[in-house]
Length: 123
Image 1 (cartoon, rainbow, N blue to C red):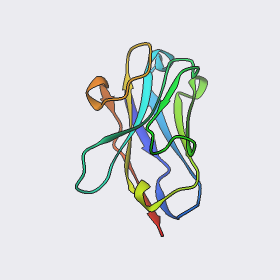
Image 2 (spheres, rainbow, N blue to C red):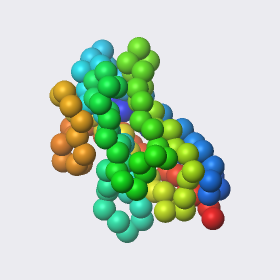
Image 3 (tube, helix red, strand yellow):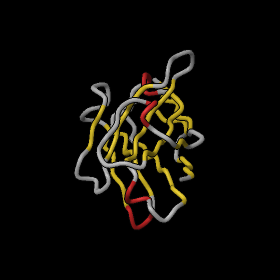
Image 4 (cartoon, rainbow, N blue to C red):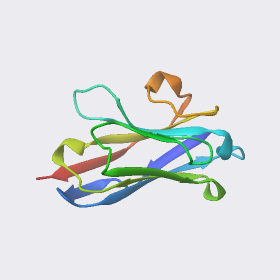
């Protein structure tokens, strides 16, 4: 599956933003999806994951309660709603897909990656 993430930008602390990841393929509903981020000079880290139907989700502790992952299988799109943004959320955000049931929280478990969209949160 090919993925394209978009929606990043420059925002202020406390703002909200929604990232989207569009997938090309007819079996999107059979992919577990995830969002990761990578700040400058740091390793890629898990942000959120969602299962096939959206009924199962997982979040990193650093974003729990502020970020919400969701998906629309009819539109082949996964979203990341980000509220109460902080400067430490600044990073390039990547979406990822794995052709499997469940939720996955490590980069190595995903088979396909989007190109990333950059988010900068100013204080």
